[in-house]
Length: 527
Image (cartoon, rainbow, N blue to C red; front, side, top):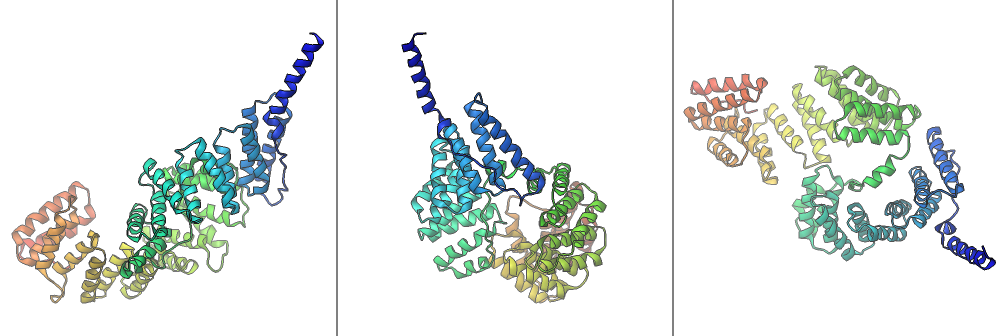
């Protein structure tokens, strides 16, 4: 090679080196990991060592080096070392500028730190690379909305709605945009639709109440006031899921177990929770949460004794004051005990559950039901009231309250309560059905109204789906109206349908009522 050629080759090599992305990388560090569990410390160090080896090996492909930087950033972010994770993500972006996952994780990191401006910039970069990414559209829409950029937020949510219709987080976002624009009618429509799709979405109640207040409809706003919970609606987000599960930790195994629950893989959930317990200190709150979930997984597999052991272990950990894990353990034990006839013990555990978590709706409702079935309607009424104070829209609690009034022989009050329930919720068929049964078969003749019971029953019959409960109600109403021939025919059809559906526990009651109608007597036991 001539001297001139050698110089040319050297200049080309130097130029290539200057344009190599490796030249623009920031240094990454291994932070002090003392606050982490030993197993998590080992994972972070292993990822750091893997990255160091990839950096030192000049033959490492650029794509592999980018992945090593990004994956090290992920374990740091999952461990909440945000400052140390940021340069790792930036280096991954330099090495692989067309990969949307690294600006995405950096956006989530900035969002976690409260830096909306940087998060917005990174989310926009993701959409440049992947314009139809629904989770990013939602996150960026929320950021824009929080910053008062309502037009931009609306465009993002509308695009997401086109790509993923019937997504609760998207519909709720459009509702919040409409509130920001003072279009309260549109807001109420979106938020009611979102709540219908996910009745447990407590965070929707406050904006929905605001929408109704904006419309001047205070009666519609009132049931939603006080039900608000301060948490974001979940977003179906595979990248976030990957970040959540990146660590081999108690928390990640809890998340894995919850995902197994979602697909009814009870055995898989049990294994995940056991692995999480092995990695979690006995005194940690997470340990108790994992024990409760393990007990639930065992119960769902039919291992009641094993489940009871886990629930009792949570209770025996000695928590005081308000404690969600202890409340759930008491509630779960109560369900097991009620299921095998230990009603008195179930009652004790339910009382403990509401003491450890006063806003525990399910525990208040279960306590009310147990009290009512134990022949104690007055204390049951108080617990149904407590349930409705937390969630005024709770249909089971409203019906339970009516049943407790009936059990207390307060028949006129039962009728008034059900009439109000029908008035407040004209679309809820169960309230109409209960009212019709009371009007048809109440022991108090001052409460009965056979004609009205028949009218309500016939209205319900126009619905496309019919149940044995509706058929029984129509027969009750016909018998009270005096048409025993029709009542007998319908009751016979109801009994045949119950036999086909193997509703054997309901047959004795149905057959007793049939015998009454055959002898020209109406039913006087509506429920």
